[in-house]
Image (cartoon, rainbow, N blue to C red):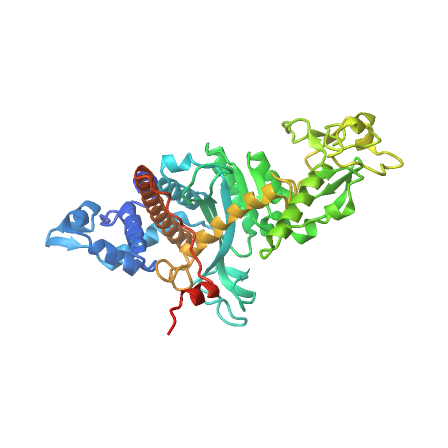
Length: 487
């Protein structure tokens, strides 16, 4: 709490009255963190219980017990509620619009930043992002009756992946989070949440969270790979891809089915899945999509072979983006990736490269010039770090599951479950404060488990033992039958 430096900021904004306030904003936030650290719901009564149950020296240090004229006075729930109302009034917007105020978002950024130690933050710059549903405790408004007790909440849509679970509406907010993941080929990294935000469901969560990532990059924390599913990639480029690239991030996303395959041409080159390809590329290769979850080893090998062949037809970059986002690409035959009669010099290449059998009768610009200029609006939505559906893209995109694990840990009935009733205060400000504290506690748990695994691996290595396997072993029916003893 002291490392985040949010308590002095809040105290400076609170109104000063003639009567002394026993509970400070710092102790109020510590009470919430203690409450969530014990796995209790985010209720003010539970936070009050966590504070008054501390040892006497800690109660005196945090102002939970103070000397009054009649003797020592223990903090009451009414004082807890009074401080909470003052703090939340400062953090909330005067005119709610479905997004957090600058002060409230700064509090969330500071608390999460303090929960990530410097040594862990330096391990990786890659982030997996996603959003999830957070229900409000208030009932939704009913037509021809009184409005809802939570006017900032609104109707949203959620979809589960469990068998038999259908799409449904809920009344509340969208929670967006960015979880730190391993770099490609880098060391093991604890999956810590770096940034969160909360918005009403009538606000598009994608541009709302991009603004948080842009502020993160502007503060000096460089962005690396940003992994997201097709729900992010299907947005207009100005709300997602272009803004992330301007902030220095490398996008790795799963394309929406409507954005896959050929999407027109540029200077004669085929625009497909974020790249530009030779006009003579086989049409079957352009229809390659991602592999299914149940793909066999033979299907994976065949798919990787086809994506490798498709890469030979891709126009190659000859320079990086300039300040305006423009770059130049060259014909694959010029770059020595395939053999084409339209480029006589390429016919001297070895026959292990693909050969263009029927070049265009009227060669377009990409076939007549050495290079062509590609403006930023070409493939603005679909361009990404790796060729879509290739083996490199598949291995890189697999890191996105860290976002799912983040939400599973804060929706765990065994500890902190942010389902409806977990927080009974209404409004965006209290919900974001409590969710941020919950995720900060979750970060500390993940960090403790990561350090314990690192110590165990170091001990086993020093003892000459192999690293402990973390893969769950499965026993098949054949294993059980062969292990059975005869009667």
